[in-house]
Length: 317
Image (cartoon, rainbow, N blue to C red; front, top):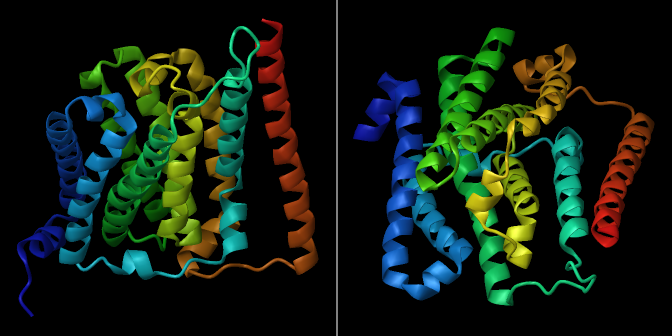
């Protein structure tokens, strides 16, 4: 069978090929977005999230072609380790999404006059939803689907060293790519803070991917995280994406130790052994139920507390 150029490049220099693929994804995304903005005129600029979705759709198509040419379509077909196992593994990030959703909803549900804030038109909200899901799919395909699996071929995750190298490299590349927002009008400080936190998020998503073996689950988590973080902008039209990122400061790094701690918990010795062996160590069903109920109640309590706190702050202002 004749090996195509992309396959040859992947086999010879896998790490370089993975990073090159990420760079090309960003180039295609930005060129497509700019071209669509020019062709779409005023309508495109009035709905930036729909514009972003259109650009992401073009970039996603490019990435799918790359996946096909390097014979990585198995990424989409690989069976994960079960819905409940995935939810449990990604429980921290699901809780973070819930807290971000509750915080934004509580803070922006009412106007300064204590009147229920009206959401944007349905067309704009649809564009926002599609954009966030599209970004989750495209970026996870680039960073976890392609880059992480290329790194796994170079540094097999049959050893602790391989696991940590794979996660650190793909997380660092994921974080560094967010520095490109500087060219989109974001302050250097805010872009650096975003890049550092994105790097930790990349490591967390990578750990979840290695644990669950499910591309679709991490793509969903990524999209949900972006949706909840940008809820005020996408649903209520408060500020825009650049404005939201520009609000980041060094104080946002206060959450970094929490992310690091969760990554350490996800990658504890017993779970690294599961990654190496490719098998899950099943707990007795009663322990699963007790653990699930306790963690679910704790998450719901945190989410409800954040919503009430944000709502009360807005109401009493």
